[in-house]
Length: 443
Image 1 (cartoon, rainbow, N blue to C red):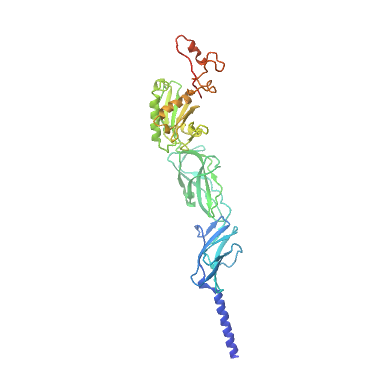
Image 2: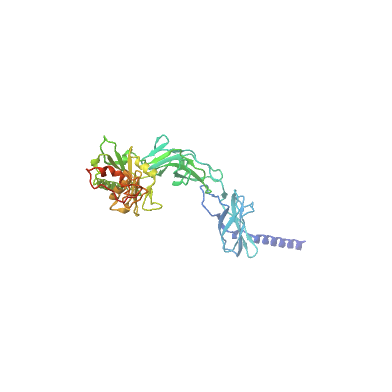
């Protein structure tokens, strides 16, 4: 009996020793964790169907491979059954795929060359997969702009707004973005004004710098998983640094008793350097004084420049067929010229560009600064088109001769028996001599 009891004791000891070798807690991997940005609650969130994991391998024993897999609980007791990966001994990062909307924990263990395994090390932080976006924030409140109907006018350039929080029960709110939109319903591509607005800023008020312009404002939230929610739109027009009469600087005023034309000079592409616009405006006025049809003696012209920038600072571009024939956005011209209310106006746009160009017609003259120092004289030429509708006197072009007041057909063209019919009264008047016309007009 004594011998039998001793044998039993020896066998029992061997069994315990063998069990201890199959699970070696001291040889387990450490620092097992999901890779990503940690939210304020200390955990991670994603809107992807995969996750990256890293760990520090043990320096004890000879590792054959490492098993990394997902669990439902923080103690890594309940396996998920998806995303398991077995890594070679020299790899310490895993890429787990096939994730669904759920909260996961990650665990890792080593398998050694002697057939034993370590305990599972469970990561401390969870990863929540959230494919849905947050709700839209509450209504936007403008805190520091004067309101007139649906228009908010801001002069100082920094707009302060606040709004009610968005919600996201799955992953929580990370931040907000405030953006401007060209469409009143906040459709189209947003141009972000402020990013990373915290929930605290949203509640107390957040300030953003606004360029001069008219646009709608929208705000949308991001959840901790990285998904954006719907946009809340400010159902109003915000005019930042909106032009007023104070931005219209008079250079010349004509006879107040006459029905005058207002020539309004403005800049495009000057980056807010309105002093340059002023310099060009003064040079243009000096050049106009050299011409009897445009100088102060006429008494029919007001001349001003706009000391402000447009919604989009640069709003002119070359022509599609003939590049030198620049054109500008009418909305921006109207925005700036509104600083100088006029029943009759002609707009002169000086566009800052290294590419030479100019055009005139329909009450608008455009000249680029690439023509310096002859910009002012070029403006006079383009005013001939814009103000008077004159045609270019380069080469004959029958397509526009009839429309241009300074052009007509010569003898034998278009059925004209003698030509120059527009000046027939002068040609027949004995008080005028040498009146005639020659080929040389085009539109």
